[in-house]
Length: 208
Image (cartoon, rainbow, N blue to C red; front, side, top):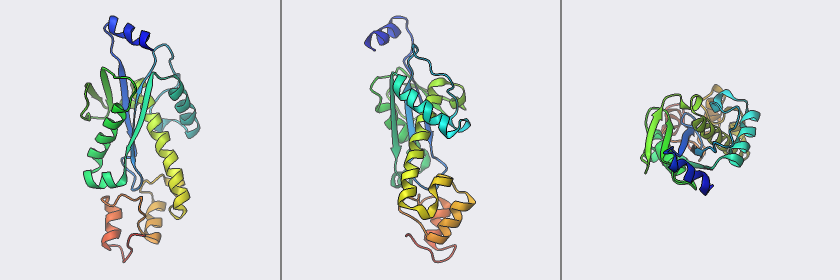
């Protein structure tokens, strides 16, 4: 690995990490981010926006990324942090944590979206980068699979909410279960449908 990094520096190349998040929209669970530095000597076929891949394909690619990437890191911000900071700032913090968790220091961070988290190296935001840049695609896959795994654990803890089906997103099923069972500790209390229930604007339901 040291030889490869020396080669990058000798030819003036960048050590690029791709960064992406998963879970900004759901009403429950942490928001995740991942950062990945791919190995140019070990290209991974089939990388693309994780949302355009089947769950089985995402899982298979996640294993390849973790095996063959030069470095990778997954981080999160909790529901409490989301409520305290707001989802945008929590997402930026999760991204920064993912970058800082890399075992190698990149020279350039390519961030999916239209803004960059504060980080120690040069960073560039790329809209729809998860379908344009292999490193960002890889990060999107790791963030998505990590979050899905946590949602399955949440489903085991709170099966009445059917987290295994809607993954925390505000679907009709999730909203129905919220009305029936109230607000769980894993719900984001600053999000409007959850906050409305806590305030009693849709009845007398309180936190369960």
